[in-house]
Image 1: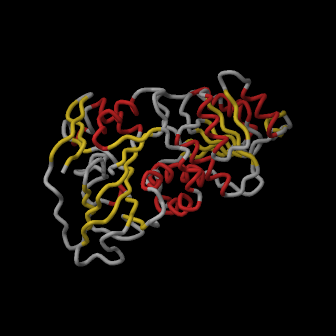
Image 2: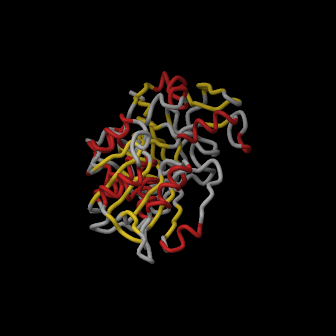
Length: 337
C-alpha cells in the first residue's frame, strides 16, 4: 500500500509499505477521504517531529470504510463507514508523530472501540464531508469553551475552516447574531453561506465601529461605551484581532482563543480592567471528537461549503503543496476513489 510521508525538511514522498495486519482488538480502515491540516505544512517544513525526523507519516483527518475486524472487537463490522479519532491510537497520535498516518490506502486502528477511537456514520454522508470531523471538533471545542447561550451576540475572527465551523456551531446552539471578520472577500462570502448573520472585511472597514453598529452599544463596569457583543472567538491568530477585541469588549464579555499565535501579543491590562472579561483558551477536543459528528450529519450541506479543493490520492503530494501555499486554498480534502 501507499503512505504519504515527510522524508526530510521540505520533502514528502509516496512510500510503499506492507499492508497492515489486524490484531484481535484492531480494525483496518480503507481510507476514503482525508483532510490536510495546517500542521501538515509545519511538519513538512521542519522535516517532521523530533521523534520521527525524516520518516513521519502524514494525515489525521480521516473517514473511511472498515475492511477487517479483529475477533475481540465489538460493535463494528466489515463495511461500516467510520470517522477516526487520531488521538486514540495507543502508539502515538495518527499523523502527528505516531507510527501511522491517514494519508494511506489502509489504516490500522489499534484497540478499536466505538465512541472512543471511531464513530459510525450513515451511508449517505459523503466521505469528504465526514473527513471534516476532526477539525470541526477543534472548532466546536473553541465554541464550547466560550459557553454560548440563546440570545448571545458573537464575533468570530477568521473565516478559515475553524472559524467557519465555529460560526455553524454558534448558530446551531441558538445564539442571536454571529459576525465573521476576515480580510478575504471569498471567505466572507462563504461565511454568509454557512449561516453567519453579517461579515466585516477588516481590510476595508473600521472593525470596532462596525461591530458596534451591528451589535449595539454596551458598557464596561464604569459606564464607558463598548460594543454590545457577548462573545469573541479568535480563529485568526493575528495581533490585530486581540487589539480589536480589547477595544470593543464590554463588561463580562467572553474572549475565546482557538487560533495558534506564532508571536507574543502584548495586552494592556489597565485598559481592560474595567471590562472584567473572561479569557478562555481552547486546544484540541477533549470531548468533542464525536459529539461534532452528529452536527455534521445534520448540517452536512453547510459543512460541505467549507471544502475549497479536492484532490485524488494519486495527486496527494501536489495537494500538500497547494495547501501549504498561503492564499492558494482554504480547506483541501484528498479523496481515494
